[in-house]
Amino acid sequence: MPANTEKTGCCLPVRAATADVPDSIAVAAFETGTMARVNIPGGKGLIGTDRPELSVDGEAPLRKTRVRSFVMDVTSVTNLRFRQFVTDTGYLTEAERIGNSFVFENLLPLDAPPTRAVAAVPWWRVVEGASWATPLGPGSEAACLDDHPVVHVSWNDAMVFARWAGGRLPTEVEWEHAARGGLGDVRFPWGDAEPTDSDFFPCNIWQGRFPDHDHGRDGYAGTAPARSYSPNGYGLYNLVGNVWEYTSQPFKVKSLKKTTQRVHAGKVGYKVGKGGSFLCHASYCYRYRIAARTGTSADSSTSHQGFRLVYDK
Image (cartoon, rainbow, N blue to C red):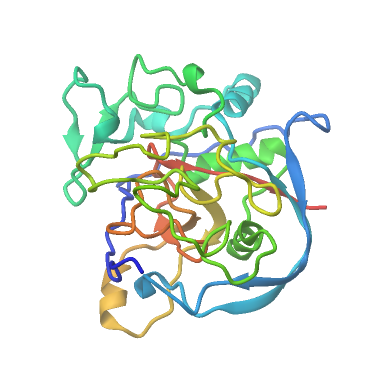
């Protein structure tokens, strides 16, 4: 069993200000079959866990609820698909309008220009010119990573994309129901077997000592292609690890504990993120479990945050 039980900082820097978000993007008219989607059956859905690792995040308890069937993207939204949206609409993301975004320092090349550290989490750097199109700053073109998840996209940006694409962000219970893949009360999309640093790599997470060095034994140091590793029982890829995925819901933790209240003080307007990312490790951010959750401000963007859409039937 991983040893960290009260690591609360995780790896999510936030912005101090919000840019205006357009609300007039037209809906795209994609033909059937231009992107992979699967039907997620309805029925009895599970959310949360009775085996919490980070109780401060509101993981517990395990609850049952009814879920209507819906359709879900097989992968998170890729750079290629997001580029189609930008080409069609001319949309500028919040990172582009603000002029910078948060990049994990170990991703930056040795000759990168000087950057500012985020005080509370110094492995995050404020990189001028970083955006979905230039994920490490000017000169780092996302066109080389068309099949990777789009990153540096805020929750607000994702909502605009969803309107254009004719979909929406999933609720937290829809995301968990889909991630379980029909297996019921399991920790991961493949079951309960824990990833290791040595010989079991079912997803893209950190191997090594965070934040010093990721050995990349799972094949990637940074994002992996959106369609990589084995899919879960519903045919969905990379629901844990790789990039965090937004949900449609506000981040709330119901607790009378003063310690928990202090951890989440000031998170008004934050949104629930699920699945963890390539930066997660059991010793630091054990949030690549299905029931794990985090909160992030709606205007923040980072190099490990993405999203996928669902569609009503």
